Length: 181
Image (tube, rainbow, N blue to C red):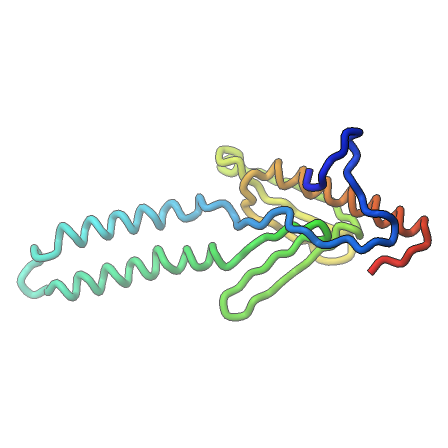
């Protein structure tokens, strides 16, 4: 559904041998539901700190309360958020890209032209949230897993469409004798 569609229903395709530019289809992260508990911790820590500030027992001081609250927020709110934000999934008209990591970034790609199988796994909680895990396997490399993908059915459909369009273009270029870039 990412290609413009003509009146006949076929996607508009460039002439054989013409370079096809790579367009962004989707860029997303895993479902944010895993940050639910972090949000509750943040609300609870803010409320408890506001309530207890100035009302501590004699040996404790307010700076100790603020330091403890900051440590809890750092460990239970900031770290999970950074870990969640460090992984992105990108689908273009040519490939699927998974980037992850903080200090050392790793990147894995899978080309639509080579073709791959798409497996969708959805647990009970994932079904409740409309999410799922997509596994892409081309039979040669290790499977590429897209974990907790939001709107998993839409992403599955977009991947299937991209495989079809890219294989049609590759077959057409191979039949015309044109070498693709």
